[in-house]
Each structure stands twice: as structure tokens, then as C-alpha cells.
Length: 315
Length: 244
Image (cartoon, rainbow over all chains, first blue to last red; front, side):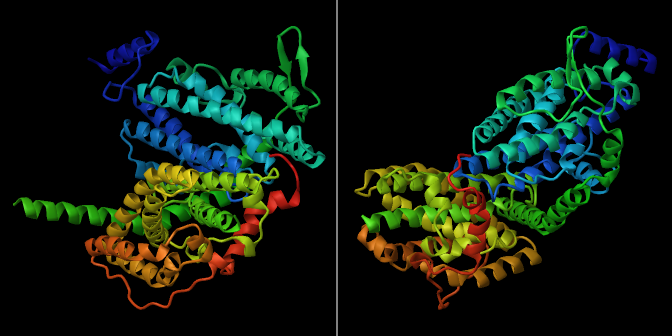
């Protein structure tokens, strides 16, 4: 088949809603886009362990400590599935991690914000996991098979995290004055960064068109963002809190909430590495990797020696 | 009654403080699979601590909760052994400590499963399954590091040298143990056998004649515990009487 025929067959497969599998022919750009997106997603899970991990030692009750530890551990598990999905496209976990450490690969900018109070933990569960789920539910139907299947499992756990986060905020919202203030403050600080998680406006997004055609994405950044705003406006009422946007208003014509302008300057600054914790997050990841080198080497050396001994015994 | 309560708190404190220490690895492990494994052990230990604290809280009565016991007692009231409160160190120190402690817990909980106190026996029974896994996982790491590279071997030897002085306290009888019908001194021989067997696989010797430090069971701790509690208890202390 000529490249043209291969490309046509590939697009026909996608249009027929048949998943693309690792051994299928695919355009280089499709492979690259998936590697970029899946690895970014994997790195986000792993870097995302840091801001929440920041509160494990200080969780205010044994129950909350156990819930938080289990949640952060789940994220490590998500990272594992995603690195594996990435490997099916021909890039090793080591290479992928190396790209993170050298700054070639990105992760979600939301994790460059600091967790300053306990209420941040519940708020991350509600807003950050909530925004991630919007994207991830869509990705359970993405065209690349291994990615779509990883997302099905991840989505189940993420929805559970989101409910736990909301429940934890609900307790704060019914608590003392200090707890309610802590809750509102956390919502104020996380709301706008959460909206930024959906990425640039559709008119500014360079990767969107081709990704929609290949059904890697099925909804645009702005569609997902709008869906998220509509849901949160209702949920925040249950907490008796407010969202920090004076321009939030129901629009009878569009049947959606209008909302204020995102600070795109802040968005791009954080993407470029100038967020409040970019440096710390990357340093923490590199430190763990470098300090773990001798452990990984020892495990490999022991496995090799064991194999050698087994071979010698068999001979 | 006081002795029983102290004994249960001692078991709970051991589990909680080691759980707290191991959780420091979460997000910082040497490789993703092991980050998950050590966090999981931490989660098991916190689960154990909760079972013991809940029981202690019931015995204490007057509305005492598990969190009152974990978050509102001071350094001098904690009854954990010194071993569990030592800083996490490197991967050799962490896995070695886990091996030494879990091997002790395994022997102890095997005994507790037949204890006259049915509640204690039930917790031991349930927990033993987890502890068996902790022993397996940590012994494999001790062997791997002892047999691995020159560096890993020197690290595990250093860990043994610095940790050994804290192992004796596990087998020094405290009055709350004898009053609860537990003779920890009886466990030492089997424990040493177990440790020696794994060490032999990695060509490591277990030290003899080390001076053994103690005090934790009497509430006389190393300076580390105060900082662990300051961090762990800070929200409950800063905002007294709140629900979280």
C-alpha cells in the first residue's frame, strides 16, 4: 500500500470508531502526538503526588491521613499504567522520565501551585480532579486503544477522589469560622488555575484541529471548560461558598454560565516555568530519581547474579 | 486496666510512628513500583494503629476517639520503641528497619492470635496477613541490597551498624507487657534465627554484643519524636475541638 492508501485506511478506521492498536500502521505525527499527550499525562500524575503528599504528615485525623495516602498512591498507580501505555508506542519509561527531568516534556501546570492549608487538599480533590475528569471521561473514547483502556480504570478512581475531596470540603464548610474561611480561601486560590487546566482558548490552541480529526480529542478546550464551570457553579452552592468571579452569570440564550477572563499572562508564565513551585517540583522529582539510582542498580545487579547462579546450577 | 490500655497504646504507637515515617517516601521513592509498595506498607501500619487506638478509645470510654489518642497525647505519653521513630534514612535503612520490625511483629502477633483478650486476638489475626507480606517484601530488599552492588552492600552494612542498638528494646519486658501476659523476651531467639537466615543469603553477619538503647516504652524518647508529633498533631492542636 502507498502511504496515501495507508493514511486513508487509518482515517477510515478512526471514522468507523475502531481503536488503533500498537501494531497498526499509524502516521508519525499521530504516534508523536499520543506519546506527547500520554507522557504529559503520566508526568502529571507523578508530579501531582507532590503537592498533595505535602500534607500526608499533617493530615488532621487518622481517617484523613489514610484517605490522602491512598489517593496519592493511586496517582502513582495511574502514572504506571500511563508509562506502560506510552511504552506501547515505542518509548521506554526511562526515556520518558528523562524528558521530564530535562524539561523537554511538560506536566499539568496546576501542580506548580503550592498547597498552603489543609483545605487545599479537599479543593484539589474537588476542582483539580474534577477538571481532570472532564478531560479523562472524554479520553476513555480516544482513538488509541491502550490509552483509552487505561483511562477507563483511571476515571473510576478519579471520580472516587473527587467525591472524597468534596466531602472533605463539606465538613469544613459546616465547621468553625476558621475552617470556613480556610475553605473559601482555598477555593479562591484554586479556581482560576483549575480553569486554566483545560488549556488555551480554542482560537489559540495549536494542536486541536488535527487531534479532533484523529479523535485523540473529542471535545475542544473551551467546550470542556464551559461544562466544568456549569457544574461547579451548582456544586459550590452546596458548600455555601462562592467562586471568585464577579462575572459569573447565567446566560439564558446560551443556556450556560458566562464567566470572567482567565489571566492568560499568568497561564503562560507558569507554562514557561515561572509558576510558584515549578522549580521545587522538578527538583523533587530529579532528587528522588538520582538518589534512587543506586537502588535500581543494586536490584539489577542482584537479579543478574541470581540468574547466573541459577544457570550455573542448571548446567 | 491501666496496664492493658498502655499495652494497646504501645502497639498502636509503634504502628502509627513507623507508618508516619514510611509515608515520607510517598512521591519520593527510588522507582515507582517501590514508591507504591512502601506507601502501601505505611497505609497498612496506619490501619493497624487505627484498630488498636479504636479499641483503646473504647476501653477508655467517656467519648474518647482514636484521634484523641493519636493527636492529643504528648511526647512523654507515647509508648513506641525508639526504633520506629528514627529518621527514614536511605532505602537501605528503611527496608532494613522494616525487616527487623516486621519480623518482630510477625512473632508477636502470632502469639497474640491466641490471647485471652478476644479483641486483641482478632486484630492480630487480621493484621498478621499484612505483616507476613511486609516481612517478605523487606527481607527481599535486604538480600537484594546485600548481594547487589558494592555500594548497596556498604549501605546495608552501614544501616545495620547504626540501627542495631535500637533492636534490643523490642525484647526488654515492660510492666504493661507482663501484666498483659506477653513475654517479649521469649521472642528474641526465634527473631535472631529469622534475621540470621535472611542475612546469610546476603552474606551479612548479625552483630553481637551491641549496647542496646531503650526508653521508648517508658515514654523517654529520642529527640526525633517531638518533631514527628509537632508536625502530625499541628492542626488538631491549632484548632481544638474541630471536625475534619
